[in-house]
Length: 262
Image (cartoon, rainbow, N blue to C red):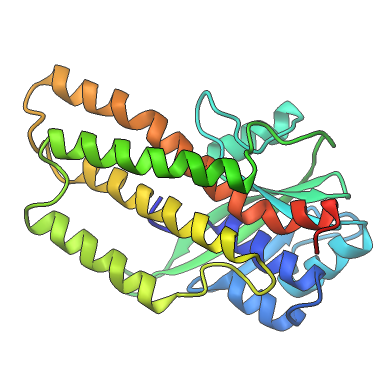
């Protein structure tokens, strides 16, 4: 949860493009980020993979009025609406983008190439048919913000009780990396998103950082298998809340446009 999902970047900057806030080239550059290249495969009307700029334009021509994010996990099909084939691919990737208005979805497949120390990441987005239905378990921004405030308190309490929250070089390094990343990328969403969405996404990322520390910072005070199981049990609902909030933030531009707010 510390890393920004590729589906989030694609949806955020794709929505900014559809809203006329950014140019196609700027959107494509932002979506690719630190990766080497992104291509879209299986796009209707195209015989082979195409670049992002062409793909985004084609999706608009096919009727896409916005892009929504799905961040599913086992037992939690967050943001998905079917059919089973698409849901299975999205669950395997743990992320997907759903085109609102076009009955199409995109699932990333990531490839790494090159020698150690000089690895290049290439991403192929597989375009598949989706069912046009309300996405599963996605809260409103207001609901997500209220749930996150409670989740942040719960996560801090659990980590403190289990002696994971704040000490040791691993935890300090993780916190420093998180702060550096936050300072590098203050624009956590694309142009056009409401400030509340930015606030919710930043809070969700902070909760995700705490959860990552809990799982990565050794055993902490959870010295027995039973205590480690209890930690996982306590943190699972917090992690789910953070994922739901991320999806609500990324999808907010589409939801507001559909309600006629923007």
